Picture 1 (cartoon, rainbow, N blue to C red):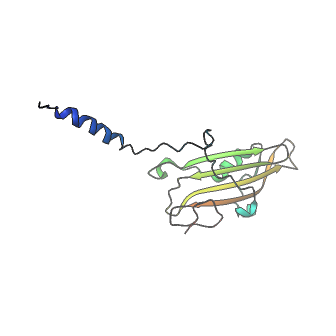
Picture 2: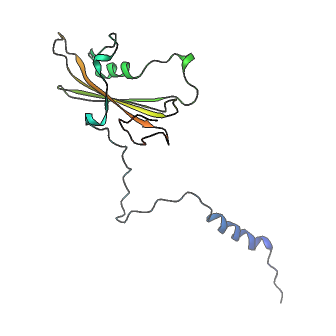
Amino acid sequence: MNFRIPLLVVILPLVSLSLLGCDTAEAPPEPANGEPEAIAPEPEVSENREDYDEINLAELPPDVQLVGIDPEAIAADLFIPPVPPEEAPEGLPVDDTVTVDSDPEQAVVVVTRLGLPDDSVRGIRYRAEFLPAPEAETPQWQMVWAGSQYLCQPGRGAQDWSSDLCV
């Protein structure tokens, strides 16, 4: 007795098995305790002034506002310069993020600029500290300290936020 099996019946399962093994996306390993793993947080913004390159506020141009009612607006006006459309760089836009941590005694504003069109600097982070303005008739904030950190392009310096300049 001679059996003939159609070629398609033999090849189709083999092709299916081989394609199953081609999945390039690997599932993450299950944690030992069965609970999902937490996503790693982004690096925290340093609260130490020593981790920043200090900006001498006395050397800023006289028209720069360091006192006002909104610390976020003061910092954004200083550290996020307006760019006329005709001067905007080609490619991806710069990603600007402003965060504020405040209480009645102090406000800290962090301005992060990523995706800069620069061959050595990938990002700049500014930290500005504000205290209530002592001479103000209405409640206002005064910038009392500011510093900057840099994130360099690959091969151009620090790959983590640092006060070291990129090369």
